[in-house]
Length: 289
Length: 280
Image (cartoon, rainbow over all chains, first blue to last red; front, side, top):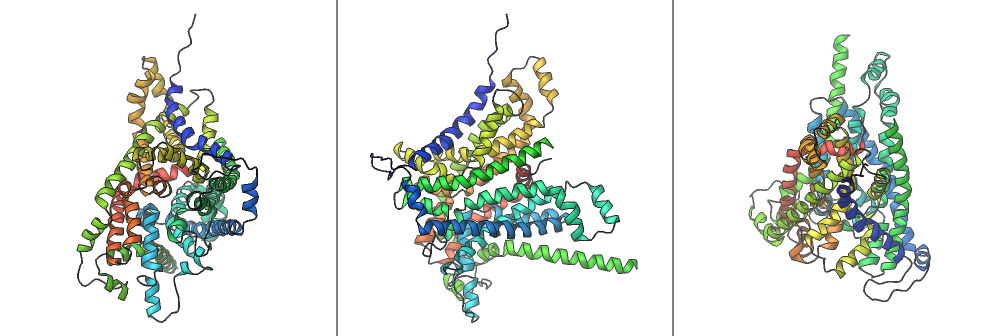
């Protein structure tokens, strides 16, 4: 009789799964539970209060401000870095020899730490004392730091994050563009297509799956936006740059309302969940091709 | 006719290079400004941040190293990054191997789980995790924090390793099995040498990300003696923000090593970025 051999593969996959489950899944479920309580993080007393955290959030003006800022952030990121990234990728496609030099130069902001990038912009560009803004002021222009102004602060933060991020898209788009079959490009050239037509009718359809994948990733990322805002304005001035990520963080660690922070975190995850379903569907379709 | 079209071509090339150069300047100019200002005194910077330094104040770097507490910070950064990379390399490559074929029941479900975990926001698990760590007295513990970072980068690393394992020809493993090799021997002697470029790529990507990480490390590594280099630098901005020359020197102390590291590893780095997002 054949005895069933022990399958070692279950042991091999266990460490990765255990780490992920302990750090992400279990605390994630705890967040769902906490979102229905009034726990403050310290007291042993935990009361279930039903949907009150969510109801309070939906009556909170700052919460809507945060959602609006997340939407502004998403729109900015779906347009500016996508366009610059695509333009740079198309231009690099024709530069065979200098391509990698440009690519490395573009990527340097991307590989630096967000904390360093944020401080760099705060002190060297935006500071009215020691930055480029101060030079412009000395020249007689009446401008202050965009981060100090309630209207422009969110755009100031986004500008720095975009400066850091766009080259990532260039690298991804360039790699996808290079997989376009050369015979299609040749045929189009023979037909007399100009640069725009070549892009619109040959390259873009070929890289469409990558472009839409990046759209989903950018949308997810925009709802998770945290680092640059926390580092540059901390959500201020007067909550003008508050996003869901920073708002939840403030609840948890400044005002000690862990239940409310959990509710807010759950709300962010909801957007992420929708986007990740779309992401999973796109990449499934990709794999089948 | 031919000459005209050649002229036009040179013109087009010129425009392309100008656009690319402008983009490169936008990327690099702020960093260059940091470099220039790191040699100047505070008064010089306030007078004109764009001027070229007259005297090189190298002592800025010494003060920066001391006030930023970088001798502790860099050691802590190396510890945090090293622990994360080691955990990831062992666990993610084993998981990647198992998931690179129908080796276990439910591998589809595991893949689906990792795909969901990849898009989960940190805020979904951060708050309970923080209080669990606080109760276990793990706040400020660098290896314990590196486990969180490992969990964060696990899905991407597993997927990357899986693609590298999928590209290994089936016959290689089959013939080793016929010769009587066990799973351990297959992984260590057959697979490891073939997928080592994948291991390097994952190590570089994860290493750089954990070196740069902000949200987790600032939340979990409290107390100045546990600060990483970036956290020490941020603490400086609060307390020592007045002397810009020293701030800029500190910033460049952090920027310099990363740029050198990136220039040395950029091929692997770009490969890793691309294979996560572009199929084929």
